[in-house]
Image 1: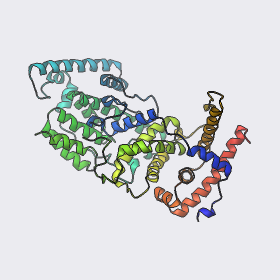
Image 2: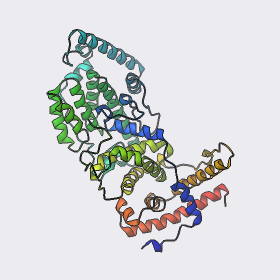
Image 3: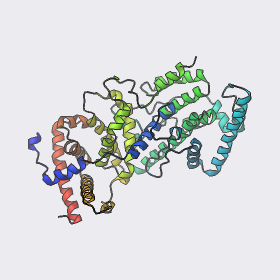
Image 4: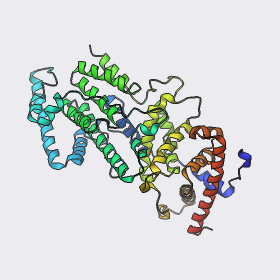
Length: 267
Length: 185
C-alpha cells in the first residue's frame, strides 16, 4: 500500500484540518505551570534549578485525577501548611505549625549562642518533644526501593501516570492516583523543609514517606531529597553512604550529578 | 548542580537538545497532540507534565538522527492511551456552547470560524479509534511520512496505511454526523 492508494481527504476536510494545523501555541501560563511541576516531580527545584515564574521551594503539589491543584505560593510555610491541612486536618496543622515555629525559634536561639552546632543537636528540644520526630530522626535509613526507575522504552512505568496502566478498574486507578498525590504531598513537605534547612521536618516527612511508601513511585525523588537533607544537616558521611547506595539503585538518575557536585565541595 | 538548562548528562552535549530547549520548543506540540488524542482540556496540563517527565528520563535513548516529534508523539500516545482506558476520562457530550463570540468585527468572525473548525476537528477525532487516530494526526495534521509514523508507533508501514485509510473514513463520517447535528448540512 502507498500514498496513491489512499482516497484523498477532500477540500472540506482539508480546510478543517488546516484550521487545526494552524492552532496557536499553548498559553504561556500553562507552559510555566507545567514546567514548575516538572521541576518539582524531578526534585530539581530543590537542587538548584530555577523555575521561570515559579515559586522555587513553594512549588505546588499536583493532584492527579482532578480536584483543585495547589500551585506556587509566596511563602513556603503557607505551602507546607496547606499541604499539611489537606493531609491531616486543621487541628494537627496548628499543632505542627506551632511545633515548627517553636523549633525554629529554639534552634535559632541555640545557634546564636553556639555557632556551628551539629544539626542533630541544635533542634534537640524539638526532637525530644515529639516521639514522632525523634523516632524519625534517629531511625535507621530505610532501604532504597528502586521501583520508579524507568525503562527507556516503557515510559508509562516511569512517572506520574505509570499506575494508570496497571488496571482497567477505575477504583484501582483512583486509588493509585490518590496514593501518588499523597506521595507528592509528603515529598513537597520534605522539599520545602530542605529548602528552609529545617532538617528535622525534612527527615520527618521523608521518614514518613519511606514508611508509608517503601516501594513508592517517587522513591527516587525521596532518596534524592534525603541525601540533600543529610548534606544540609552536616551529616556528610551518611550522605555519602546514601548517595553511594542511590547510585547503585538508580544508576541513570539525573539527580546523581547534583549529589556528587554537592558532596565534592565538602572536605 | 542540576537544572533544566543542561543537557542530560548521558547525552552528547553538542548534538542532543537540552531538555529545557526541548520543553520550550515542543510544549505546545505535546499539549495539542494530547488534545487531539482525546485528553480533556482540564487534564491537558497533568498529562503534558507526565509526558515531559518521561521525556526527561528518556532523553539518553533519543537518537538525534531521528525526527523529534514522532518520538514525542509516541510518548504522548502511550499516556493518552492509558488515560483513555478510564471511562471517566472519555469525552462526554459535545458542547457547542463553549464557543462564545466576544465581538462582531470581521476579524473576530474569522477567528470564531477558525475556532469552530478546530472544535469540529477535535470532536470528530474523538469518534476515531485511538490507534487509527494516532496515524491520522501524525500524517494529516503533523505531516509526517509513513515510515516515520510506523517507527514512532512501532507498527509495520502497511499497518499504518491501513489505519490511516480507516481513520479517514471514520473521521469523515464523524464530521458529517456532527455537522448534521448542528444543522450545518
